[in-house]
Image (tube, rainbow, N blue to C red; front, side):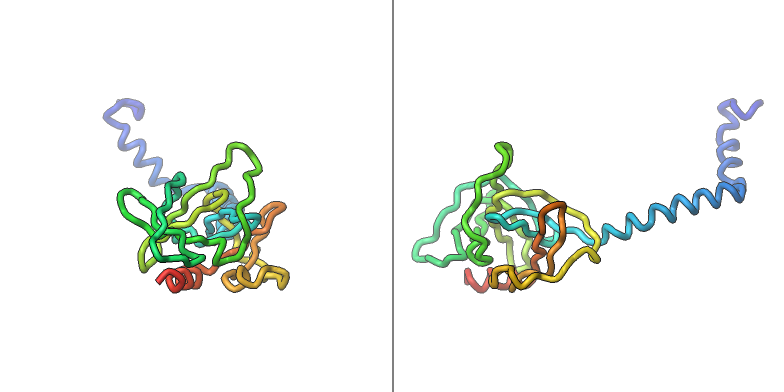
Length: 192
């Protein structure tokens, strides 16, 4: 019976896996792994990137529960808080919808730059309960190296700077990275 016959296929595979690799093979494999390691290390953090007004912002990706098409927001009677838009139906559950631009003072929505971009409802998985907000544009998840993050410049609006942990260069744009805990805490205080 030869090694190519079905009865010996297992032993041929076993011999291949059990053999000791040549030194050249080991050196080549180590060089491939070393070349790929810096790329993996560079993408050490992730942010969910979206736009409010003219500001591109980022929240920790783990805070985002889902992104949906816009839904009707129902105002709450006797509530005129700037940060509270009302409630929105998300999969059969009433979810508090906040006005993130009012809290961050990013200004009015800006028309989309292309005809295909649509505003979206972003649902946050906050520890105290889900919150939703409307984003003018959503890029989605973006991996980055934590060493790329720069300090928040003094020219950033005071309200936005209070919630920002840094600024991330992103092509020709800059993403203001937001402190999720501080933002959710401030929203909960505004709506309670």
